[in-house]
Image (cartoon, rainbow, N blue to C red):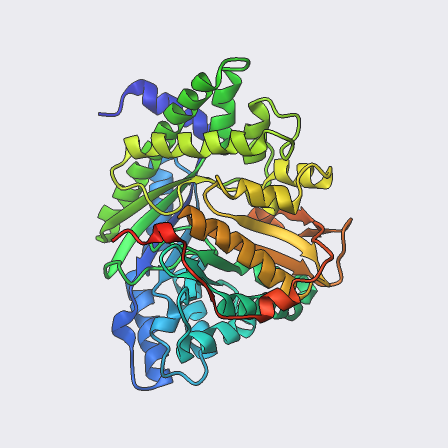
Length: 450
C-alpha cells in the first residue's frame, strides 16, 4: 500500500532533489539469430530488436507522463556480440545493424558490442575487439565493453594489452570530438550480466530471451537527507542513507513493474545506483562533502564512500527482492560537478580515484587523461583496476579518455549527461615491459570455493 506521505515525499524528491529513473533498459537475447551468412545474421538481429523493442520508447514516455516520474533514457542491451559473430569476416557489419536498430526504435543507446575474454580469446573475440575503434567511431548509439578478468579466472593480460591499443586508437579515430568514442567503451573485471547502465550494459548469456531492467538515481535526494543530520554520528548517517535509498528504490520498482506489464516482458532487476549528472545538486562528491570533507579527494574520502555505498545497497535490498546490476555509488569524474571541481582543484587524483574504486560500485569512470598517454600506460591502468576487482571479488571497470592534443591543464567538454572533464595527470614512468609479458595473472587463492 502506497501512503499519502510516501506520494508527497516522492514528488518532493522529483521536483526539488533531482530524483529520476535514469534508464529503462530492455535486455534482448540474440543467441537465436546465429546464421550462415553475415547478411542474414544482421537482418535477423535488426528484425528481432525492432520487433521486441518497437514500443519501448513510447511505453517509457507514457509511464513518465502517467506517474510524473522523469525517465531520462530508454536503452537496449543485447547478447555480447562476439558470441554470435563467430563466422563473420567483418564484425563491423553487425555493429552497423545494431546501430540501425537503435535508431529505428528511438532508444538513446544500445549496448552489447562486447566480448567476454577473462580466461582466453576466441578468434571471434579478437576480431570483435580489434573492430571496436572502427565500430564505435562510425556509429552513433552503439556502446561496447570487454570483460578482461574475473575472480575465478584471473586477468587475461593479452586482452588487457590489446584493450590499451584499442582505447588509444578509438581516441584517435574520434579526435575531432576530443576522443568521445572512448566514452562509449568500458573494460570490466567481474562484469555483471544484468547491468542497465551504459556504456557497459549487455544481456548476459545466463539471462532469458528478454527482460526489463531499470536504473534509478538520486544523489540529490541523499545529499538533502544528510543535510538534516549534520554533526550527528556516522550511525545516523548510515541509517539516513539506508532509509533514503529504500524510498528511491521503491520508485524504480514501481516503474520497472509497470514497464514489464505494459510491454509483456519479464521484470529483471532494479539497479539503485547513485549515478550523478553535471547538474548542481546531483553529485556523489557533494554527498561525501556533506559528511564533513572539505573537498572530495582529501583524507577520509574512501571511508565516506565505503559507508555510502554499503548503506545504499542495504536500503535498496529492503525495497525490492530483485535488486541487481551494479547498485551503489558511481564516481564518473566528467559526469559529477563535485568531482570535476575537486579534480580541477588538485584534490582528486587518479591514484585517489583508484583507492576509492575499492569501495564503490564500478571503477575508474569517465576520466580524461593526456592525449599522448601510451597504449601501454592505458593497459597498465586497466590491469591495476582489474586486480582490485579480481582480489576483492567485486565488479570494476575502466572508462578513460586519452584526449588527443590535450594535456594537463586543459578541459574537454562533451555536454549533456557526459559533462566535462579536466585532463588528469598519469605517472610518467613506463609500464611497457610489464604489459609486454602477456599471459594470464592467476586467480587469487580465495577463488577456489567449490
